[in-house]
Image (spheres, rainbow, N blue to C red):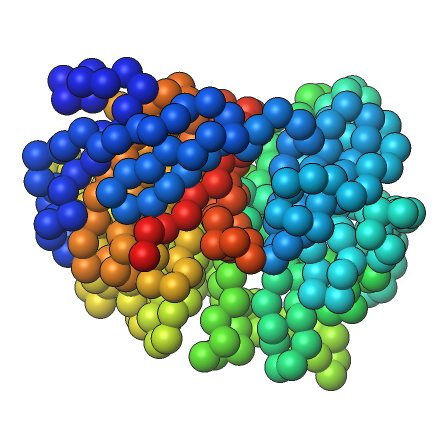
Length: 425
């Protein structure tokens, strides 16, 4: 670990705001931690922050509403998780992997292999059976080990709803095959407030991620699709093109082909169908192993998660990049905004603020966040070291009080804490 990271065990380490546009950081300077206990607010020169207090795990938010779970119950808040207006029994609550508020008030949430909808503020809920592209029921497989059903619906990103041609669409992909068992890799969507959820895209059968002892003819995944992946990192919508973009991981294994892809999808509302095109398929030592797609104006932005050195001098193809969407497949037309020393596969942009989270197992910082208050013109890095080794994931847009919400995962993926962050004016 860097010597300057030892200056203050409970403090943040930030770089001066005079960082260059490509992330050349000035000498780190210690920022001020006001309070460190859950629910108490601390600050840096750029933002305030607090750890969620004891109570339900706050899994998602939208405007004034928040969805949480604890023990054998699920919870709804209508005042930004200050109090919980409803609590409903749900025996599998601790296995919830996904939740999302729809604009019509509906709540979609999922356990490891089952999907649910509440259309009455958690008074009741019902299970949703996903439909495949032919309209047939798409049910989870029966696992050989019932304790390992896989993560069918768990996302790595945190924004899943967009206004598309005057109506809201819910679109997300599953970050899976890391723990919990083998599952197929899919992109899901809904155009009716979560009442119906369908497959937008299904990846092929990846031989490296199947149930132990499974025969090839029973492998999970679309047998007609030669494109394989380990999981989906991100799905995002570009309103300028009326198109969705997705990126996947992880690496190449056993000559089965690339697992890292960028895809572009167009949805035909009249036909209720999708057309997808592969923009790039590469190895994992590349800026295309990435996440955090964001579209602002005529530019797309992303954070690179490259594993190994990409160039002969031993340097990595990492950082925060932008380009015109039409130039996505041409690295010579990309602009590097921040030269990150560590993998970052999660990023969010809202109101001119960009922040991306470090992958904790790869970083010398314990809980690292790269932050730009001005659309990437200047950058700082902070270490929320008092929380221990944590990876910030599932960034969600501001609530009505202006607080972003994110998971802090132990290592990379195991649930630990929830952090709220509010930029200073």
